[in-house]
Length: 100
Image (cartoon, rainbow, N blue to C red; front, side):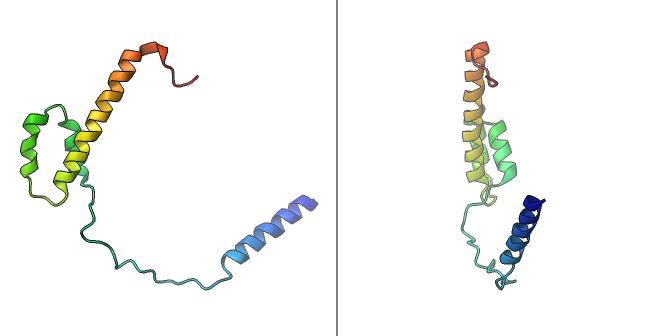
């Protein structure tokens, strides 16, 4: 019973101590960087799906959508990493088990 009382007292003190200082309700969120790279999801997925067709998919670099080309390049890189990981898992076969 004494342990439960101490646990309740400490949890109550932690809640009170957390809210004991004044909290600013307005944070400065208007100072975002407009030039910062933002990942385009569609470009990233297209990059993953077209990484094997790399010479032909270079035509997609002419799309003039903001951040599309960078996302496409990151998608190509992720696609090649996925291909290498899948190839390693196939060649290693049953010798490598995840749940050891």
